[in-house]
Image (cartoon, rainbow, N blue to C red):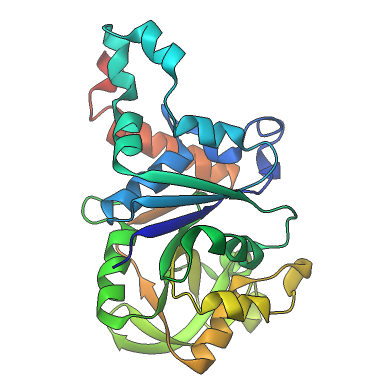
Length: 280
């Protein structure tokens, strides 16, 4: 039974400088809630309550967020402001949190490898908090957990992207075994549009089986000198089975300024106001 979810959060967030000079990009707020909390809530909804963070220098605010602040809670106890902590209190009560560091930025594959000490020898999910995924029903991870329970292999979430955006993503090719579900035959990290095997791009949701750790160790650095998880997954697909799932829901690229603003506006209009927060 899947219960662990890994969050690689060691990146610098350079596209949001100077805001991210002293604050983790994962703590940037979508209205009144930090980006990373949306990902943790999605994991909890999927039944993944053992949350691990692969952090780096300057990421202490993430640890503090998912912890009790006695001074703050004492100051607002019994006031109308106390309700603003309800969502994060719920997260803290429902999940456990552990942390390790990625000492050197060597790519997503290496970050996931550093997380082995947190997840051990069992299957686990990976969430990249930059990708905000929202929908009215089951979250993307919950959808993927259902598939994992059926197929028991690694799964990546994919979506169709425009040709002029394909160079920003890992891209898959595969055989469609049922609507929206593909058995992966090829993966390419950030290809030129003319070299892409399809327009199906991998987004920041994965379920990985534990043999991926040994495969990552044997994976040579690829694009930009980094250890790419797509290279490891391609090797895993060659030796067994990796599935790609075209998920239900809407994704926002909060790693870009444009995507972050789009997500903020969407959350404000469709979540914040609908919960009545704008009138209190």
